[in-house]
Length: 373
Image (tube, rainbow, N blue to C red):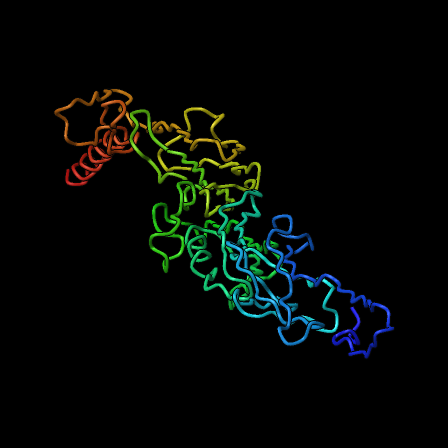
């Protein structure tokens, strides 16, 4: 305890001297105490190591040996690993005071969680471990690519680009890579092609699902009005009209789910159509003079109307005295297609005119004969 007692000085005595007594006081030396990161002795102090005595000086101690504890690594105040078996420097001026030496797990831990922010689910967790203060060779690049190839988009990655440096505090480091579902929009002008890759640069990646083609994003409703005679023969070019409904859709590349917007219009109306005047024909039904406009919606079917015309009749000249009844063998006049009657080629007064000519001719003949007589 007292350096002055390193040597008890010699004294001189004589026959009349009394016995001499001296007391030299010693204190127990301190120990190197391995502790965990919370400062508690490891294994209840079973690994404590007393300071060695200086063989040349009873008042001094030397640096103790760092004990080896399986699964544990001693670290200095800065967290740098120390090597068991080496001497650990203590404060020699305080030989009776214990010195704590922190030990950490030989394999410090870290983990990287890949989280789907669209669903809130964790896709996977990668557990890492390494010696204190060492740097992991794990990188997130390949795993992120695996998910982006599946239709994800990177939102955030807080894992160190150069790799995680393991701590010396037995506390697991936690990193998160956040991903979300990539969403694409298709329109009638820029539709998808079902079965084809959404990203041409990733032919093995997500494909355009059914329902993303142009026909699923636009709906054309057609109206056709046919103009025919009673036998169904076309007597005029049909009238064609069309209205088109359109919408857009979004595609979740991860799930393939297609979500549509509302159609651009809830309904459209075909305008009224006035039936045309067709020479030689007349409407059979006056109610068809105008085909009323109709309202359709995206679920409507094509509309078709038929307007029927009948052929108009003919003015047929006849002889008032001797009516001529045309027959199929009479080639002098055309046959009316509807009635089978041949119309007359001459005027209604043809017969009367002939009789007048004959009468005048007779009068002229009598006049000339009288002159001659």
